[in-house]
Length: 193
Image 1: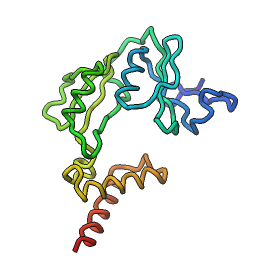
Image 2: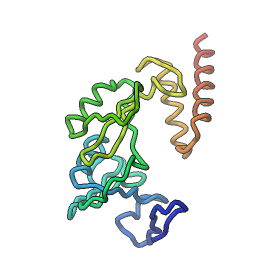
Image 3: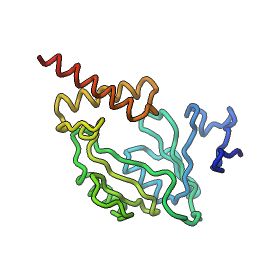
Image 4: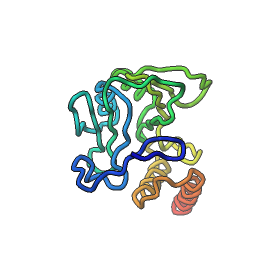
């Protein structure tokens, strides 16, 4: 077991670890959480459970690519303030933020107020009280450019971001994403003339 400079634990996985052998460089994001929260995130993200034993759960993207998100079961460590890591859920380009909030509530989430004020995202908590946010649909937020869901501009922006992600640049900083989105918009507008 190792730790990063802030003391967060991390493990180097042996090549013979069959559980994580197909995950690539990042095997899992390991969370403190109950079996119920594993079921919640499986339904919330549409990711199948790939492990469900002895109160431990794990989910993974439907294409079985990338890391797993795992929960170790009870007992949970006491929560000491705001979570250091939380998920943001963005409805699909043609989605509806309120419909997504309602769907997540039906799965066991609840809206919470952490002093966020008047913002365009919904702050929620999963069944274990971990904060997460539901953003506005992706195409309405990309690079600060507002686009109607389903519009040509929204589809082009979404396509460009998928291209960025597919070339392994998922960690690209927001300013670079803005630049690519603006260039894409300019190219799209010039093609329409």
